[in-house]
Image 1 (cartoon, one colour):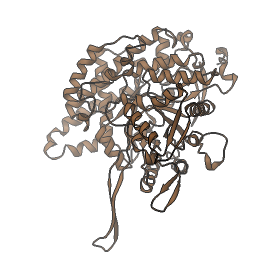
Image 2: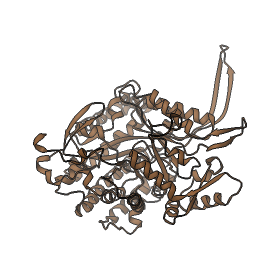
Image 3: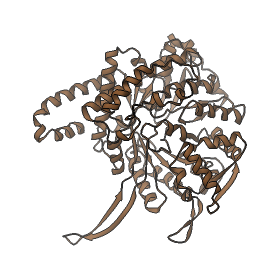
Image 4: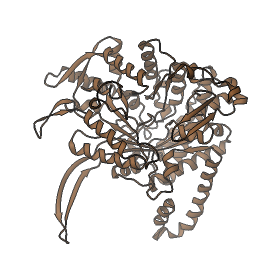
Length: 592
């Protein structure tokens, strides 16, 4: 209804003669979308399904917030998150700008307590503004490895400590740079800083970050602390192993493979979204007395951006059987619907509306990957699984970017297209680190096809700044009896406990029993390699879990993390270990 209202308003006046044609055309695409859903060819993320028929239809899945280091911005961001949590968004909060504990506060000559009190306030906000009572609010906090309070920040979810020093209801991600990796491997010291005194560290990446970092190390007038790089790494790995949490955000990989040429320092709640987020700045606030004699407060602010993304997942078991013509029409219909939603959905906060309508990011991922491999008589560990994955994801994302190019011809490119790598004649395929590392996985390259598409995009643009992101699909996958996202199966039969307790049986078990591999039997390096092949074509990231029965050592975990960095992965999600020996035992099929 909201969609029709928007376009009916648009077609008033000089465009009135187009109204009936437009309604007819829209109904055609509405029916196509219904068919795609009813045939389980695609699934929409939970907020889009749950909120579509509400009065204020907030349909975005992922909300990325970055507060500045001042009282107004911190309070403003807290309020923004409350609104989005109320309307079912998964929240991300980048704490990288918040000054360290002990830092001076000029306005009252006091001392800051650092980011932890503000993070604890976020915890209370998210708990208070749950998602309409349907499910609990959730939030990830991101912070950089060089923050002066990093040793306290990585312990926020730890079981020990006092309530004042923990915020266990949240999840956490640490931003990792290549220079940290280098110093670990050389067994050198690193220097921790107060973000208030080192602003360039939140604006640069790669070699420019290294130069800024070493400049601040040499500067005697600022507060800093030296520790062994390995000591920090050990604490990171310890927390990651004990809690499963403490996600990893590879900031250099994100920005070196970033299509929009704007710094991205954090990811979202599930670590698949990597889009810009910037704080607003207060310019002036004053009060006036209106004509009725009432007092009004007028506030002027320079708008920042709240990163917003709508998620969709393509059922690979359906995609693999589409004809070339169906693939084109399918992607066009899917992206057309995503485009309309950006214009018609409800925005609780203006910074979110501004960013979403200006940049138009979406996140198209996949579902049923484990089923697809098994149905093609492939195991995760089979050598041929790499090449098979390469061909499927090459094909899928080529059609997605092609459809975006067609929409750009019809409706115009997104507003900041000319500032992007798209405008330079590049695609995610062209800037993939996997390609730059001389294709070390030795999978096929269809460069000519991508070069031709890049030229078309250079001329006519793309409709969206970002297109691809592989989300977890824990709920939507079960709704169509599909395997979750890109995940291997935990078991052939299992009971999932959440809002509802659901027994699940892997699809096509009779036919594919011999080809399903349980997650505990697949080496982390195999999962990383398959992810790297997919990342070659994705302009955002993937919710990627790594599984370990019992890691041999911290060195094993660190080697896997470095391998992920080498192959161009942008983020790592949970590290999972079995809760008990029972999880390692395969369920008897006779008993299921």
